[in-house]
Structure formats: C-alpha cells, structure tokens
Length: 372
Image (cartoon, rainbow, N blue to C red; front, side, top):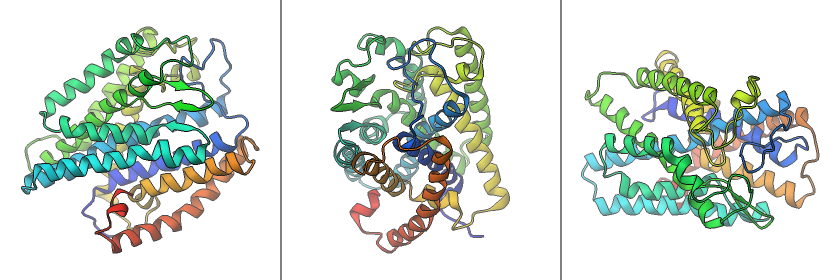
C-alpha cells in the first residue's frame, strides 16, 4: 500500500461511477431494449418500466451528479490551495476559463462528430459551469450554498416559464440554460444552470475539506456527508410521496419501486437531485472511512479509473458512439450481452488507463494532458 497526496476516496467515488457509466453507454449504443424515459418530455403516462431494464438505466443516474459535484470539489481544492499560496488571481481565473472552455467544446465538436449530430451533454454542462465558478468562487460558502439550494427548490418554477413539459422539442436556447431539446440534428440533454447548482455544492464541500484539514471545523467530512446524505434521502422520500411540485412533472403513478425511483433527470428535478446526491454522500462517506482503514493501492481499479476519468470518458464514449453510428452496430444486441460487453470493455480500459496515468505523470508540463 502507498499513500497519496490526492484524496483517494474522491478518486474511488469517481472511478465507481465511471464503471456504471460504461454500462449505460454500452446499453445506449448497442442494446435494442434500452430504456430511457427519465423526462416528462419523452415519457407517456402508463408506459411499462421493466424491472431489469429500468434498474440498469436507473443506477446510471448517479453518474452525472457525482461527476459534476466532484468536478466542483476538485476544482475548489486546487484553486483554494493556489489562493492560499499567493497565486495571481488573474492567472487562476484564466486557467479555470481555459479548462472549462476546453471541456465544454468537446461535446459540440468531438462527441458530436462521432455521435452523428450536434450534442450538448454532460461535458458541456461541466465546462460552462466551471467557467461560471470564476465569478462564484468569490462568494462565501454560505452564500454559495444558499444560491445552490435556492435553485434546487425554485428551479422547477423557473423552468416552467420557458419549457412546455408536454412537448418534447422546444426552444434550443432555453434548453441550453434550463431544459431539454431533441431533434434528428440537435440534442441538448444537460442544461447548464441546474448542473451549476450541483457544482456549486461540490465547491462548497471542497472548501469544507480544506477547512477541516486546517482545524477550522469539528465535524469530519465523512460525518458531514452521512448527515447531509440521509437528510437529502429523507427530503427525496417526502417530495416523491407528496407527488407534486419538485418532480418536474414526472409523477409517481403508484407505489412500486420503479415508480418511486422514476425521477426526472432531463432536466433534473428536486427529487432527482436529493436522491442522487443523497446516495452519493452516503457512499462517499463510507469510502472516506474505508480509506483510513485499508489505505490506498496505487493500481486499484477505482483509483486508476478515477484518476484518468476524462480520458476514460472520451475513449469509451467515442468508441461506442462511433461503432454504433458508423459500423452498423446500433441496437444490435440485448441486455445480458450489454453486461458482458461492459465487462470486456472495462478489462481493456484498465491497462490503457494505467499506461495513460503513467504517461501523463511523465509529462507534467503538457497543457493538453493537464486538461485530460
């Protein structure tokens, strides 16, 4: 075992969701039975939600919230450390803007080329939200939390002013900020404003980690995460039980477990955010506790995938969308084979990510590798 300057549990959490993400992307590309009805825009009341298909899709819901939240956490830790060391503010801001712009542009360019149409998804949302942190990083932690929670609570009302829940295709401009848009030529699934609220919360948590390390707070980060996680899950149960505002009009139609978990991801509802961030908080808290007990293995699967998450994402995503769209492999198989293909892909991705991590470490001054 070896110790690392990085917080291994954060990498573990990121690596864990990357594995789930591969399963979802394999299903999206190859699975003829793929189920994706997690928006009021594409779900018709009474549609069946087959258990195995629904579960396979539902477990991937945690991926984007974790990816965005931890992007905010990692950025906050990096930036706040630079600030404490006296780095020039303009240099810090420039680096944030360049990093965010690089990530955001990958969706409408590289991802879109392989996907066969213009696409604005999670990289767009992360990149634009990251650029916004140039402004928001100057606010106090309490103000940031208040802003994020205000959007989570009021976001559905604001979204309703610009998006008709009963029509799948609306204004592309409003979708970039708030909602969802999908045609044969353009797909916008991740509006950046709702996801900015998640990144802001991640930034606040990053600050908390630093404050705890400096003895400014008494609660361990794991303890805080347990408290916040179970509180968020309790709020989810309340919102889902009341079955009204907070569900982005994707309502519960009964008391089956599928209906309880059938929450709106596009755009993210209050129930979705409470559920996914609640689950994430509990898992991350457990990982933080485990890190203290078992230490860190430098080539552990979760650690390797977590430390190479951007390259991991691009390689598997481009391969899957490319083969699906240009090699006549779209929707060619079923769900059991989806799991088998996912396992094989992970076996192939692991040695590549180990190599890439080492290659990146040997070239610390590379601008492009820094962003990947």
